Structures are given as C-alpha cells and as structure tokens.
Length: 404
Ligand code: PMP
Image (cartoon, rainbow, N blue to C red; front, side, top):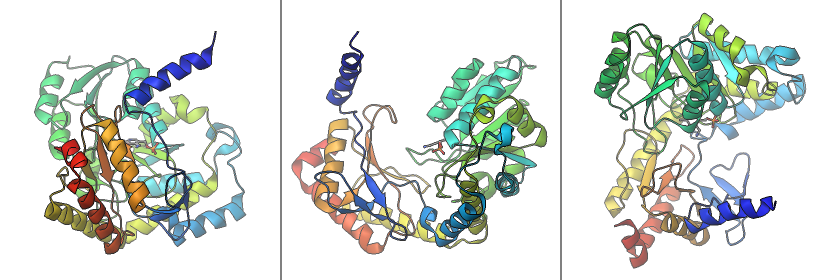
C-alpha cells in the first residue's frame, strides 16, 4: 500500500481548505525579544513577534536565564529517569513547593507540559472515580477534551461561561455520583474570562469538584501572578488549579495543584505522570526563578496591561475591528482561512510583522483571526508600526472586503 499517497491526499485537502499550517522558523535571540531572526524564504531577516505566548518576555529574562545556566552547571542536562525511577530531582520538589504556595494549596505535581497535565489529570480523575461525570465548558482546550475522552467517563457539555446552564445540567444528574466541573479562566482564542465566582457557587451547591485551567492567566493576573482565581480571592474554593510554565513563565512544563490526597492520587495513578522522563532539573529551576520573580514584581504585568490598552485604543482609532474582552489577548477577526493566511503573509513580507493565522480547528470555521499578544517588551514604536501596517491593509479593497 502506498502510505505516502494516503498521507498526501489528506494534506492536499488541508491545503485546499486553507488550513495547512506553515510555521515561521524563528531564531529567538536572548535579550532581543520580541525581535527575532526569521529563516523563511520571502520573509525579512529580522521580524517582530506579535503572537508569542511568552507573554511577559520571561523566557529571556536575565534572572531566568542565569538560573537555568547555574542549574545546568549544578545538575547537568537531563533528569536521568522518570519521576518514579531515579528522575525526581531536588529541583522538582522545590518547584512543586513554589507552585503549591503560589496557589495557596497543600501540594503540586509537575508534568512535562500543560497539555500533558490536563490530559493526565482528567483522564485519571474520570476513569478512577467510579461513576464520575465530567461537566466540561463547551470551549475547553483540546488537552482537556482529550483527557476527558480518554477517561471514558460520562461527559456533559455546558454552554460557554454560562453558570445557569451548568446549574441546569448539574441538577439533572443523580445526587450521589462524583461530579467534576472543568473550565478555564482566560480563554485563549477569544480572550474572555469566565464568571468564576458564579461557577464555583453552582459547583458548591451541587457538591461538585472544580477543575480550573489557568494556563493563560498564571503569572499575568493576581497580586502574585496566581491567576484569576488569586485576583478574585477564590483559590481556596477551587479543588484543582492547573497551569503551565511555558507561557507567562517563559520556560516549559505543566502542573496541577490541590490537596495532598488529590495530588498523591494523581501521582500514583496517572500514566502521563508515571511513564515519562521528568523535566530537566534546569528547566524546573528556571521556572521556579520565573515564578518567584513574578510573585514579587508587578512591573512586567503593569507594562503589559499598558501596552495592551494602547494597542486596543489605536485599533479603535483606526477602525480596525477586534474582539472586545477584558484580557491581554487581542483577536482581529478575518473570517476566512485563505484571507487570514494572505494577510499574515503580507504583514510578514512587507512589514516584518509576524502573527500566525489562527484557523480551524483551533477556532470554529468562519471565525479565522489574527491573535495579537502585546507584551511589556513591545515598544510604542512597535505598536505604531503594527497599526500603520494594518491601516494600510485595511485601506486596500481586497482586504476590507475580506473582513467586512
Ligand atoms: N490549556 C490551554 C487552555 C491552552 O491554551 C494550552 C496551550 N495552548 C494548554 C492547556 C497546554 O499548555 P502547554 O502549552 O504548556 O502544553
């Protein structure tokens, strides 16, 4: 059988639909973020990155870089094993204690990514808790959806950010089955924020556990970067808080935090924790340095919020349509995959502005967009350059029809 032909046929369909992903090959240069070298043909050598999830530039912060360098000298490159078999380094335990403290929890558990933490934790909870029902916000991230699917637990979808619908769905369930309400704080593609207090109240009323993904909020919100749950004073009322070390903290890795018994339970049963090599200790040390820095420094968060507000204001002034939301994510809606790609290519080639087009299945068909994430290291000149480029594009007929 010609397997390559089978592969190619599906790739061709992706291309015809405009959903084939082309990656920008970047060379991040320490100390220069958001500027980066670009290795793609047709692109300028030097570009400004406008779509990074290194939201605060911590991936290039001297404190984080030096912590990582020091830890490599101290511990070497790799962890040397799974957590279970020789791979638990002192650095992992220090980071877990730091994370538990960040979220006001008893304990924390590290994973190799945020994706794996959601997948592993939800699949374990859903499969091990007898008769469990997982109530999932309909816009939850793929990693949560996959974890729930793999658990084979009963799944009930509730309307996005709608506590009343959640209440109705919970009311319809038998009183004595374990119920898990899974949701996010900041939704990454629309940038909206959940009504956390109302959701928690509904869950408490029904005796349900709450599972909160704060991946796009940790480091960014709350006085110590503990996320929306910290900002709203709800950390103690959420059963499990999940987060990443790969976005605002600028490194890589994922985690869950919660009670000692729950973390021990997931540590003991989650295959995604047990059967994989632990994170390099230097990664753990760098992430800990980043968390510690953002616990006591508000400077990056404040500057980011100023930059976000400035870009929003300038887009409004120029009549460039973008989704209103209360977060740091600015989606400019295009509504067509081919045009979205075309605009992104044009921005890159003509202006050295790199923004990845966001297409199906990351977002629903017809809602294709450019997702801008201004950070503290974008200068006012960078923002003005972006606005000028978008303004020029919007003036051109082809594009204004595309977004109408
Ligand atoms: N949850 C959400 C809501 C996400 O958007 C993502 C990644 N984009 C993840 C989890 C996975 O996190 P990580 O990138 O650390 O694997």
